[in-house]
Amino acid sequence: MRQLVFVPLDKQLHLLYCFAICTGGSIAHPVVGIFAAIAVGLIKEWKDSGEPGNVWSWGDIAFDIAGTVLAAVAVFLLKS
Figure (cartoon, rainbow, N blue to C red):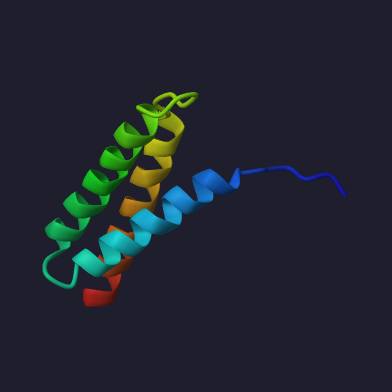
């Protein structure tokens, strides 16, 4: 059977970690969770891009945002 979609492990981890950070930060306040997840994603990408052989990845940022949005929606649905 042919695999239709392949998402690299790195992108999966970006989504998962930002989901977890946003969910955890939302214990204090949902906006705190959103800002914390996006900030951590941007800082990590900035740090990684400064290392030899690495470049800034908008794909990683996209998966950070996707994980954050999914978590924000989940928190909203669970609180309502």
